[in-house]
Image (tube, rainbow, N blue to C red; front, side, top):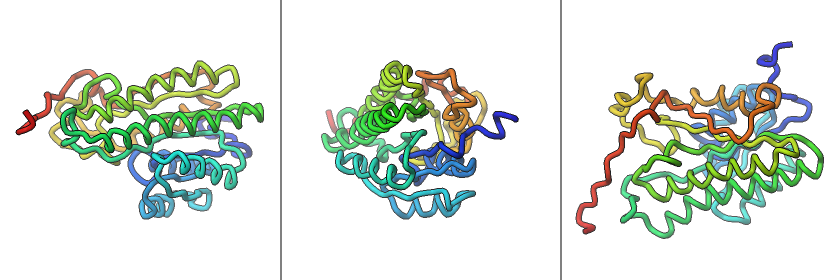
Length: 263
């Protein structure tokens, strides 16, 4: 039997994907149901979740969930709904992230925007991972978590709320991998580059900085996400940060922000 033909155990595996309404989260959630994995599509936008499920290969395996993960009570509601719908979540993907605006540089970002970005990216990522792990540990079951970080965890983006939240998420992957490994729960990071989807509005001119010569697409990440999530394919991989960027990280392409009349 080929591992690549059967990457998941369909009798036990079930997934929760945040940010599943668009971009990378959508591509991964759709790929999971395409492999036969029952999956919660969680997002803040009902219309995009509905469209993502409708466009999936196996929409009958998808469970929609709508809510803002910046709210701690909403995170708990998501966990309760996922448990009710799936029984046990064995695979978790955290791709949710608020929109980014170029005006939100260090002298422009508001306290509210800063807090929202950290709440969704980092705090929700930690809370959901920990609570899902608690259940798996209690049940003595293995699991696989995948958190979407960014090249900007290590390279300034002129958006300090975004970059710092992703830097925190990058370290969180290592902390959780070290703690949960003894229980058979793997935790890894997928590190996207310039992916023309979701919260990133791609400038085609950026392609000149990419060795492979083009901007990325969400579909470029989904196959690798499945491989890393699979306990059959990647059983000995945890705490890893896997870069999918066409080689963009080989350069630093950002100039300091224009500050206008702020000084």
